[in-house]
Image 1 (cartoon, one colour):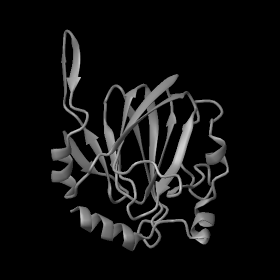
Image 2: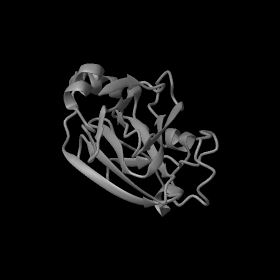
Image 3: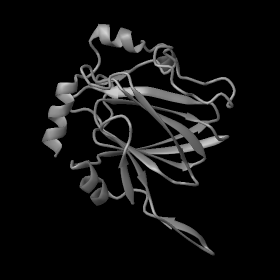
Amino acid sequence: MEVEALAVADAWLCTPRQLPDDRGVFLEWFRADFLVERTKRRFDVVQANHSVSRRGTLRGLHFADVPPGQAKYVYCARGAVVDIIVDVREGSPTFGAHVAVQLDDADRQGVFIAEGLAHAFCARSETAEVVYLVSSTYNPTAEHAVNPLDPALALPWPSDVGALVLSDKDSAAPSLEQARAAGTLPSYDACRQRYAELS
């Protein structure tokens, strides 16, 4: 598996080696040892999530309080999604920056996202199944969101999927600036300290 840094710091794209034959294909879609070697940090998986989304469904932008935060390894097992990571760490040199990648069942890449970064995806195929390995269990009191349609972020959501479908919670989420003013964003210093604890 190849693990390469993305344009937003503390996010990585993971490309597995696929082994096709006349029966189909085999691959290792997650390898903790390669991830640790490249990122120089631990990723302790404590929960696995599986979402099934219809075309045009947009989930996110979600992040959790740091500490402890929630690191994620995100993989599209079926279909295709546009996956977007946004730096919402207050004080980060790349605050507000984003990176978008396509995850699908052809290239079978995954993304690893460190604590404090916000994550969202939009289903491009008729059905998309996304699995996430996460480093902390769901805690509704520590979970937050930024509106993925915040015009100030100008995120590159696909225009060929029809009307975007969001949950009521995500539709009502604050803009990045509103979240910053409310004090809900993680601090860059707290995130760096958390990463050091995991190194």
